Length: 123
Image (cartoon, rainbow, N blue to C red):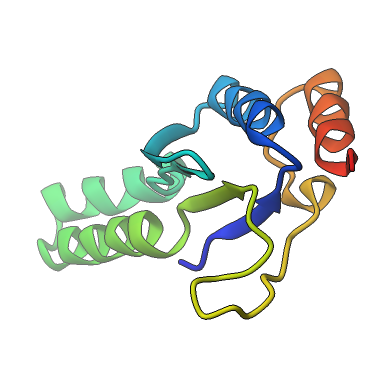
């Protein structure tokens, strides 16, 4: 999945934003002086997994393969990846397209969300 890119004005704001994402169950996958890469795995809906497991156990084992395919799709395509960076251009010099924190919708409470939006809009 393509990461959502969030701009931070400096390293301090970048670390504060990363801490807010970590509070929302994101894990840091990579970190350097000018970026933080965070990921939150999505394992799929348990209400979809359960019927396929039960059908696979009692009726048809093919349902287990469908369940594994759904799990793999959820992990590899539906997991959220967020890149917080202080850079404005990529390594080729092309300008980066930044995503608005308000559109990401990952925070559990409104206070954390408002703080993240405020931090991302500081110039």
